Image (cartoon, rainbow, N blue to C red; front, side, top):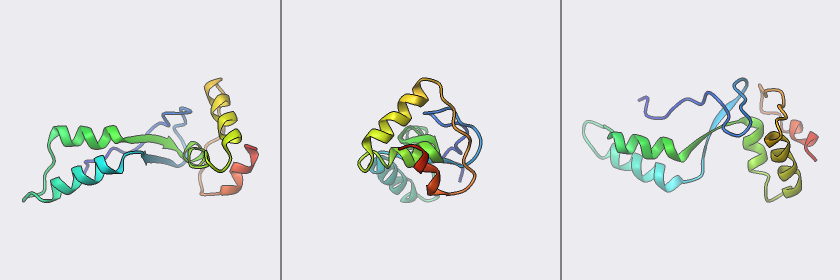
Length: 106
């Protein structure tokens, strides 16, 4: 329905190629907002609801997304990775879901 943006650029590392995801840190915002929209006939979304949904979604590349979700399992590796990113390091894009790629961030 065009309500949710397509990711174009990772908000964390700037990657524009490869697999890009939308990470949702606030499921309540998206679930309840969409639930309300689907209760209407015809189904519609307000400008405010559209903003709520898209503000809850972060554009993020596959590598940054997987590193983000590894923060409890491998906190030091994740911290080091995001420090490198902040310092300007650019990793190559990821074009397939290959978790072995993450082993280079130990």
